[in-house]
Image 1 (tube, rainbow, N blue to C red):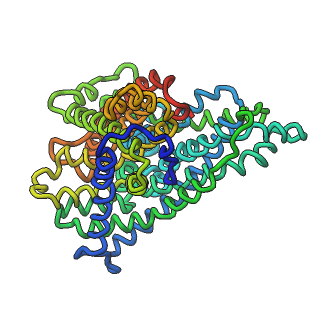
Image 2: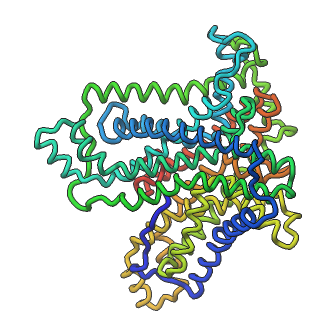
Image 3: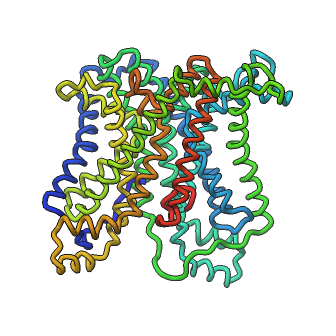
Length: 557
């Protein structure tokens, strides 16, 4: 959420000579300079926005329609999950919270592919169940309706998590007082809790708005076949077709997308300023669940089963069936598509290698940079410039990708590295720096200055105090930063769709290209590999989760 960060100026962290300058230079390079370059090219470039470009304005209007519908659905689903899973003690609460956050972590292109496989008349699953529509029936997920549904499902966890951060700070005493005055649980939550939680829901709505506008995976997989082109897809099409010669026009389109995303950014800022909750008093404890809340939790479980288990089952059957249009059964299950996906001739292993290399590299680099920035936050210039990192994370990913291209091509010899993994990594650093910085910044603000004073009294120099006192205390927050970056970067597709070249495609782009090329079974097989990688990373994160601060992992709010 974009907003004002608490800073550890009063903690007087051990600051090595020049550390503040390094932090300032880093933030300028990955935040301020690229965004300024994008703005200059978009506003002053030779190819601006034309009123006669009907395709552009049609795509902009469609982006608004999809974002509005997806945000509305996300708010309804997110508020329902907060009300039933966080504020009430319903049966199966913890597993439902985990499942409720999971759609946010599933790669958007995989979720879209699963929906396509589940809705096509040639679906092996539907054929086996006798539910397949007649051949020639349009896929119900192609077009605006399917995009709104899937983006709303993926945006609901954003609303849920934004409100969850405030639920942990709800004044339990106020709710106890309301209950003591005879208010029923639902009435107490409606009159006491939700007036304090609405800023979180508003911030989540802003995040969902920006995420829906900037999404590429769902927009491409569902929008292109449905002939419903939105801005992100149009930018990709024009950049792919025109190359670097189309950069000026693409930069102007990216700025238009940023302007359209502005209401979501303003909603986050507005909500952050009104999210203060009274301190002290007993902690909030979820209220007992009545019959209505238990039924509602059961309905939430059915919803999560529908949006998670059914698409996964569709992917599995598509990957194991001998061919599209053939009903799957125990007698014709084949591993041919899975084996083909991991064969040396396939691009899957190369895409997996690139994704892991990029995500792990970004996680380590950004975690290290977060230490430097957080421990330099006593300088006002660092705190001001860090807003650019927030903005790069809050803006649609397409804007970040175009900004990265403009910066790289503006360097001597930049054309030689265009399309390389280095450019993709640079965009990842821009995109995820704010995400990596938040846990470390918050942890640095809680450091006890007495520890640094004691080390200084024992004769430890600045660098020794930094490495032996400050960094070990920040280790849990550093782990949290790395985990969050790796989870989101490993299956990222928006940035890589615009930046990757031959031999540098990521796993997400492999899935998209296979589906775009009509190889649905192979795309389903690679999607299962992608989900397995995500599950492994989540398992590793879960093992470390007990040592991380509450709320660090999205599924442990």
